[in-house]
Amino acid sequence: MAEARARGFVYAGKKRPGSDDADGGEDAMVAAAAKKSMKSAPVAASAWEDPAAALASVRHEFGEHGGVNMSIEASATFTVMEPETMRRMFAGELGPNRDFFIYSRHFNPTVLNLGRQMAALEGTEAAYCTASGMSAISSVLMQLCSSGGHIVASHSLYGGTYALLTHFLPRVCNITTTFVDIRDHAAVAAAMVQGRTKVLYFESVANPTLAVADIPELCRLAQDKGATAVVDNTFAPMVLSPARLGADVVVHSTSKFISGGADIIAGAVCGPAELVNSMMDLHQGALMLLGPTMNPKVAFELSERIPHLGLRMKEHCRRALTFATRLKKMGLKVVYPGLEDHPDHELLKSTANKDYGYGGILCVDMETEERANRLMHHLQNVTQFGFMAVSLGYYETLMSCSGSSTSSEMSEEERALAGISPGLVRMSIGYIGTLEQRWGQLEKALARMGEFGSLKKN
Image 1 (spheres, helix red, strand yellow):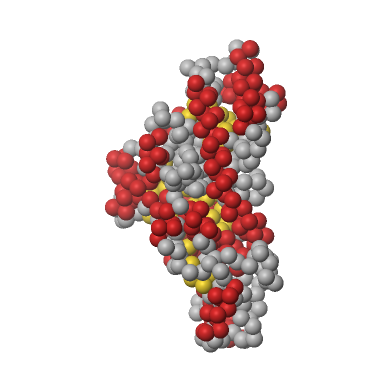
Image 2 (cartoon, one colour; image 1 turned 180 degrees about the vertical axis):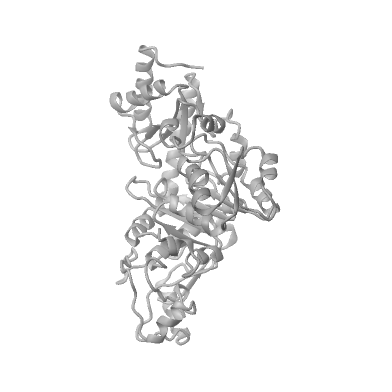
């Protein structure tokens, strides 16, 4: 298939037979593209307001023999028809923009197609996918920062990201980070040093505190200081669109809501084509040289799940809001940005995409780790409400005590500064079973807790 441009980044289809002449047969190329690609026309600006509309407008990639699903390009390496072509590819004269591929650690057609979907989802010019969420984060930061570089980041982050910024990057790359309260915009501005600070890094919805970032204002502050705003949107795909709110780069652990099956480890980088291409540069690219690129078989799996992400997110969010509202009425200490008493409720309401809710994660603060563990024990082993497991975005409810699990890389003092209580139970609300069935299981577990005097209410 011939070339087709999507949101400023060129994605190629089936390779031209017979010759590596990149300059001939333009009319045939256009005709082939029109036949093979039913949705390659530019998308109207208004369609990009809703991520679901953007995804529906992405070019549909058919299979090698006309199958409704795209084929998997599982090859590690790719042939050329003429010896001179290989030299031109390594010189950067020919590339995936013209359907020339070298090696799947560089660009792979199947992964490139998933990148096109991710770019549509986030409303960015381009995207490429990685072997994990942490590889997406680390590769972006190492591409944007050199030795001696400086990052300003939220003090409320996923524990792995916090460890990367606190320990690994200073030791290995001489890149330092100043942590701030992302809600304190004056502190954020003061921490960024013009000419030295390269990145402002934060999560759209913080893990695990569920603090919501004021993305437009924070991105404005970053722009004023000449820094790149990098936003982790793992907790809020479809719900928030950081790039449309001013973010330069959006990263994801696509292992979570986007996968939805707790069976894939993957990540994504969404941003300007210039950045994505630089990360795959043969001489200076962090993704190309560090090598955490995605397996095309994983890319195929994810590409089949993204089309129904919007439906799944709506149900995750609907149930989370219902459970949070009912738990609060029972007197429990609930953290959920969909509740009107959440400090960031109005902010999220004003920046979220319409009709997707307030997120699929809620927290119940049991104040002590002992009570948190007892609650999770009852929910899993007595009433079968969910599973004690890290991660999120699964169709079953997943529960963990953040302080002793996903935020354990932080010290007790650091967790306190980030607002992570020792008894904070993070729940990623699933959607299988009926809502009332699951509520009954949750209610029964709380009743059992009350019988043993383990339930503390406000």
